[in-house]
Length: 312
Image (cartoon, rainbow, N blue to C red; front, top):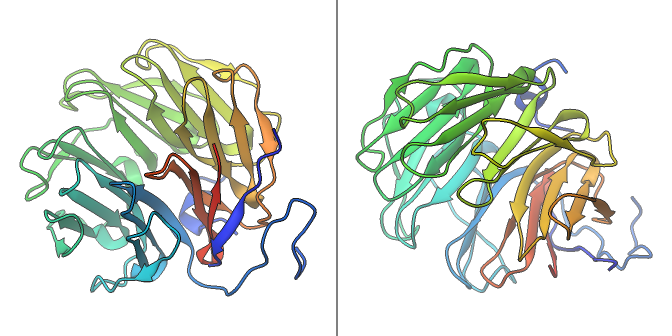
């Protein structure tokens, strides 16, 4: 299958992602459309229905779609922070996080967004909620924050590391993982009251996602793909076939999964990670986020305001 990625909105790795220390004008042979414009990088994507979705990024840049991603409309959020992550617990409750301790929340499906006090001015890199009350944020210098009231208040948790954390994922209100610089993998079995170092690969890990109740995958610098079948207690390596920095991952239907990364990298597996193959994105910049939209199509977002779409 020669999957084609089409640029719908044309929008260097963001410095904070690389801070761990580790095209032509015409459509090409794969039929990828040319860029229409340049703009701020988009760092994350989220869809809450078949029609409604969000993309967020640098300098408070936010886009909203009400037609499944066919068109995107800018939204003013009243912040100049770089928005690094967005998540929704359901169709009403959502949160964004970013630089300078920025946390924004909605309780009406994104019609309005209001600031929340994080209690820090640190860079916040990722956020995950297991329901509309219980969530976690990770960020620079090993920062972990916890809420049990829908994000109205946030309490620091001791992570046990000073490494920058890039991603957090919880299977339920107890079992969670965080990954970051140095390839650290932190695990908790009690909602973050105690975090323990589970592994350290030596190279930055940029994303981690639970694929089901027990299976979890992480991706990172130098083409790293790690898989665990026991909620992150032990890990094995999958062969990516690339040395590009891998920045984001998502699960598709059945045994299918997708990964996005630096230099327009898109990887796809249809056999649960036994083999990965490259797909042409038509992009040369970094792709920071990849997800399924509300119509089960693949969306990737990244440098220069780019939003791409492909059939799964």
